Image 1: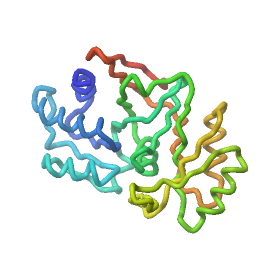
Image 2: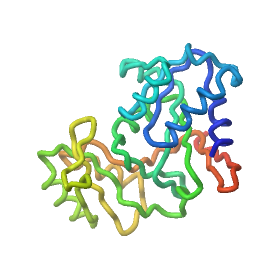
Image 3: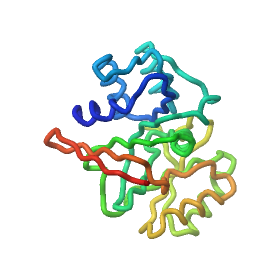
Image 4: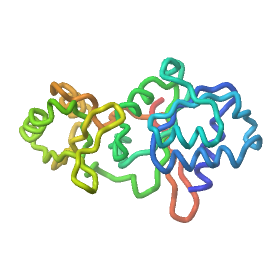
Length: 225
């Protein structure tokens, strides 16, 4: 993983506006950037970062780096993010940490997207439940619609059984499908359900995918273009 993060950090250039997904891999990337410092030929003081979660924002604040607000999103140069699962067509399931809405906004806005993931996240076919962010008022209706589409919906709860609330004030319904044959079509169908805010199915292909190998090496997979 360390070699992969060192390679990925070299994409960071002076003056960039960089979006950050959530999770341990992105947090580790920030540690790598701090450790490598000027050796990557970049002045981090000139870079502004836009985090998608409080976890990553607090990490960035601890580092003393410049944090941008949402007004900069249309000008994002680069996004680093992880994934819960990536299939053979480079379609992803994301949202295990609950930041899927903000992550999707940044991924669609950025000029370049780099995905960082362990080899275990790469699979032939997607098998994980798809996180669906839902307005609490619509939870029963959306669950009913999801069942009608052949899914097994389950509201995400914490260890005390209370629904987990996203930073946008919504709940997440994790929805398991028997198979996902057309990810783009399914993504659009789910988003058309009234009450659904966003879906953790990412059918837009990123620019670069890093795959960390267990022996310490990594592979680079190029997506679109």
